[in-house]
View (cartoon, rainbow, N blue to C red):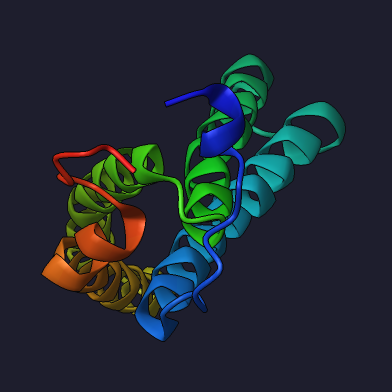
Length: 142
């Protein structure tokens, strides 16, 4: 298969569950970038206990937000490679959601929201129809 074949969009319409999985990944990317941006700004302009740790945490979250963002784009474009990073992101989100659920205050609803998004995305991503729509596992590789 040539590289031009890989860039040719599939003429059939994108399944709704694939769009929903991409939306979940995009939502997680947005949350990571916004959270990282907040930590970064507070580290640079605010008065955190440890400004260096706040800045580094913010940069790390922004960098981690790139993974689900690329996965979401790949899912929207029906690229087979995109399912792996999207699934990995969901598995990384589950312990974070558990930690938030075991905290107190406003973090509990955030943990619930993250758990719902992660589980929903996992169900959508491991669906056999998703592998078919992404062309994963086809013997001809098309």
